[in-house]
Amino acid sequence: MEVIDEIGDIEHSFEERFDYFGNKSSPITIFYPRNDDEVARIVKLCYEKRIPIVPWGAGTSLTGALSGRDHIVIDLSKMNKIIEINEIDWYVRAQAGVILADLQEKVKEKGFFFPPDPASYFMCTVGGAIAESSGGMKGVKYGSFREWVLALKIVLPNGKIVKIGEPLRKNRAGYDLVHLFIGSEGTLGIITEAWLRIVPIPKNSIMTIAAFPRDLEAVGNIILGLRKNKILPELSEYLDYDVIKAMNKHLNANLKETKGGMLLLQIDESDLEAVNKILKDNCEDIMIANEDEAIRLYSLRAQALKAIKSEHENLSFAEDIVVPISKLPEAIKKLEEMRTKYNTKFYLISHIGDGNMHPCIIVDDEKSRLELFEKIARMAIEMGGSISGEHGIGKQKAKLLVEQIRYSNGEEVLEIMYKIKRIIDERQIMNPRKFVELAYNDFWQKA
Ligand SMILES: Cc1cc2nc3c(=O)[nH]c(=O)nc-3n(C[C@H](O)[C@H](O)[C@H](O)COP(=O)(O)OP(=O)(O)OC[C@H]3O[C@@H](n4cnc5c(N)ncnc54)[C@H](O)[C@@H]3O)c2cc1C
Image (cartoon, rainbow, N blue to C red; front, side, top):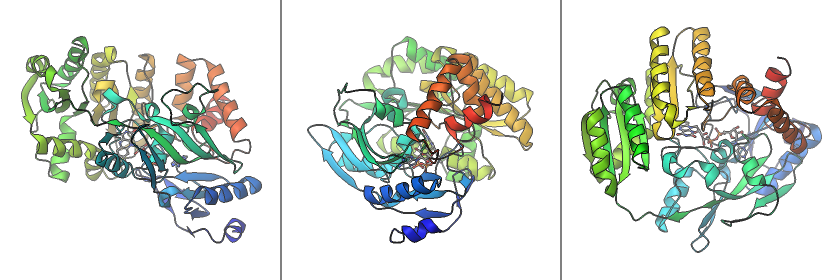
């Protein structure tokens, strides 16, 4: 309460909050700052009084990254200005609370393109997407946020405001702190502004194809076929049969329901002949979409998780594993085996072209669900993949983070990560008991 009295003139409210999967946040209060100085004032006071802070974008985290109690929430939603679109240096400068779809629309009006497009693009904020290093549907060609952030303005945990990086394509001045903050999940400071790289809207002619593979094995064959033929799609998204059924039921999607699900591809027109050949060998049906249908399919794909959640209200887990593309057929086979062994349903949504899969497990019994969740993640680790491609670690995958680092990097690496956290956030007030801190303290130290 002391905090509220001292910061009295900054808008605040009291409420409980829930993230997309229903994880609860019971904060002391929620502040809605409008500029960097207001953020810095709140943070400085919290630093002095050692009050934990959770930065909040749009709350679409899928890993429990916002949950907890007795902290304050700094909600960035009122910091939603696009400050500059630089048409010569090709960057957009925006406040952290800008909704990603708004930013994409504004740069499009000027003839530019900002590719990272998490399927939550119509809800999530620029700051949240940077803090998660979000990927998305166009990630197969353009990568995730990591590849598009040039510079950041940060309020550090002691309340000081710093700018890191420059809006330059090349910059070798010191350690790369920008990339340290990308994907830091609110544990190192608060991003208040970002300079993001933009490129002219591509002029090549893009074809959208909805393909209906014979089965899951055929999906793996298609992706391998594209790679062998050196074809890089703009988009290659997979939705399995059950996802399509849920989308038809809850989104009136009117999509063809075939056993092998649907592969949504966007390719350069010049690759059409080669792609058609690969698809014909593996698909029951192929449909080339016109412009309107292409927009509709893209938007439907973005809502796939929503459709599953409408079918299973208590859905609280979505995997985010990545496997090397060369191991995709093997991973798909193993997923199928697990599905049979556990006699369960999991809906498979996948940014399949970059090996990133989101099986959403539906098992009533919590213990089996957790067991299967960990089994799938371990499969990815053992294949030289990762437990998270884009959703991050949050609370949910801290134990698995330790397992992956042990297996692939060595424990020294977790030590380094934890030391970085302690140096930047010496009082451990930023989004506590999550991510590296949780992994280090609960699952490594106690092991
Ligand atoms: C339907 C749906 C589809 C999704 N699809 C994808 C997808 O395709 N790809 C993908 O990568 N993710 C996806 N996600 C996950 C999620 O949307 C992304 O991680 C998103 O970018 C988070 O943005 P947000 O603004 O909601 O952040 P929040 O959920 O509010 O916060 C996420 C994390 O970032 C921190 N944070 C937020 N703002 C700041 C800030 N300004 N400074 C510092 N830390 C901050 C928070 O403390 C928290 O740890 C999806 C989620 C949903 C609900």
